[in-house]
Length: 177
Image (cartoon, rainbow, N blue to C red):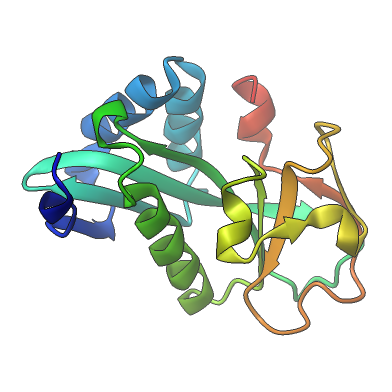
């Protein structure tokens, strides 16, 4: 794909008729059935609170999903989500599509009233969006990840005075994620 074609990429909310194409994107991007299974389970349990696709013409070439999570030492008023998974078809990778999905996804989460986003991801990728090590805020995760476990406040001060164990939706454990 040429750079001028990247401008033709559109980001929009997932629609019911996108399910097969989203599964294909996740299968191709991860070369594994785990992530597509996770997306299917989260969607089936109504936990895909923000799910966006990147389209090139009528083809879905990328996907991002956010689902609710809990933080053990956070007020009940804090609304937090996890970013996972984010995928782009291999032939469309390294062209800014993933970055657009992340930026638009974060904006959609903020608009939906979420306060915090966490991600277990590449330490050279997610900091460009403002993610910092979650340990800086006293946050731990069930996977034992350190630097790759990052957090971002969507509302000023949302990460202050919280801490403890972050628990992703049970669907993550059920699918082996």
